[in-house]
Length: 505
Image 1 (cartoon, one colour):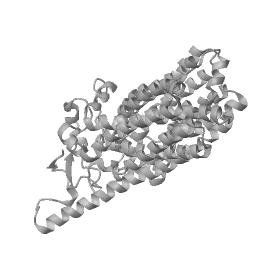
Image 2 (image 1 turned 135 degrees about the horizontal axis):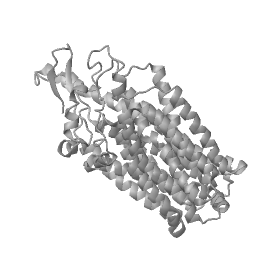
Image 3 (image 1 turned 45 degrees about the vertical axis):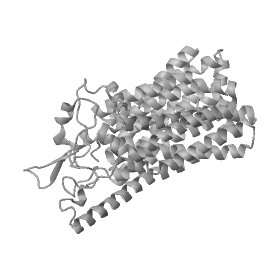
Image 4 (image 1 turned 180 degrees about the vertical axis):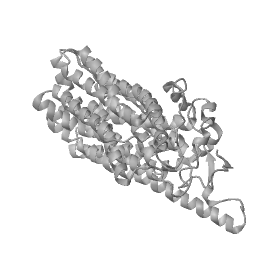
């Protein structure tokens, strides 16, 4: 909770905001004076001060560059899928062995964002983008030149190390420049990059691998990484709120304290899962992502082996889920913002009415704080779409039924997954407003770990129990996590009050 006091050197009323970092309370306390009024109260140190010093056009440019950089990681994972069987034959290995080139990449995507997110919170976003894209470019060159499976796996790990940085830092960048009630829309645009990768990757990679060979898949990624690095160097400004606040007069809100190297420990970030609401949110995040990832890796097999499509044509089928991701991401992000605005208006009206009735003389409408769980109120729409797409689509493939119907279900899967991601991602950031990059790195860790597991076992499931029952198992796993997140929707505020984290929003 916040403790209000008067600053004798300022006309404005200031508020200390308790940091949600899982590190020691002393580190947070030493920086309480750096963090002021809740961002919902525009102009916390004067109405003339902006939340961010950047113009609307510059902020749009930042979001676009961040989204394009965020596209690197899923493109690297998914452009490679259509060529896996060709790689297996070219390197003279087995299907189970070549699958490790996928698993190693996914594990890298799980672990490395924790490190990058902490570095970005300590040293800034810009240097992390530049360094990570350099690492990614080097890894892509290594993949293109690999002559053995071992060399390819090592290069894929390096590639994952570089490409995964934006998984956490990107959300931090969005939180740097947009206040709470605009953040969902901006996150919806940013997530288009990471979410479109699984759709565009197989399409682009399929035609490249079919026409000029699998090594050119990695040469194209090398070029992409180089372009993103140049944009980070010459175009992308530094957005970190602590660094920006030293150069510009902005609202002193949600500014992360500068932690020591000991306190800036990625492993400590993982302890945020001790809170029940965080654990349930991460559980649903992981099940949605794992199921979506397994579906993405299995679709080329269905299109080519069951429906008889070519490698390139099967990639076109991913456009169905791609269009769904665009709709789900943009609509889902905007929906969460509108829910916050609507909820705040209702609470303000109720507070004003109590004041008029004389029931609460000390209640001030500006003291209203909208619960973080408000972002989750429409999430069920996305999850139900996703679940319908999974269960129906799996059995359509199992029975070799209409390809058109399968593509409709893929559209539902893409729409539902993207819509759900906006709600869950925004909710976590609202609970930890001073560590947006790090909490995003945490959710990326847990969902990627589960993604790596499901990628390894999913082919075996298809071989042993078939498409229908494999998708049914994933359906019930996701349904179980949905029940958990609905507990958060209805009881999350009470759970946070009792077990933490106690949001200051």
